Figure 1 (cartoon, rainbow, N blue to C red):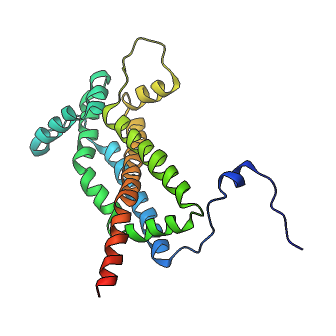
Figure 2 (cartoon, helix red, strand yellow):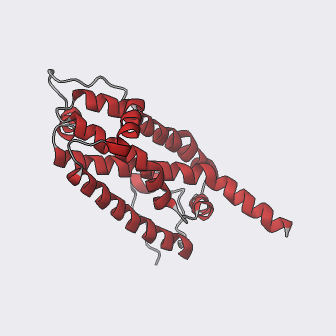
Length: 214
């Protein structure tokens, strides 16, 4: 006797997804990425906890420059009662961001990841609509918000819940370290997903062309 699937809005929406065994290459990469994400998060948390209130030296000039270039950090420094610490912490993160991203994604199978996601889709049209017309623009918008912070942030008005969290982050060291680590990991994860779905198709095509060329 066959077991009927219960009617469900979720099942209806996910009907185009097939259940496929995950390739071992991707399973290994997932374990590695999880480990590296935890390591980066711990590093950022410790950095926020031990970052000196007064900083300078060789990194002083590039930190000052990068925090002036990135609007979201510049706005945060402008309203923070611990502006020097905020500038030093987020400026250091911005300088380290390329290395943190490289460490997170080094050796990741972009092509196989895209191929696996593509083959799981029962409807290829739905896959491209959801990923390239909705998913990628949404991820790009989130990065835009993190970089530009396109809202007016100032004290002296009744804040929303999000503004309360923001003011908490830029006012005290421990919230700065915690929320700063989460925001950085979020930006790294979004950048990684964009890399997979923007460059994955080209890597799959290149691999196929190389295979046919042999």
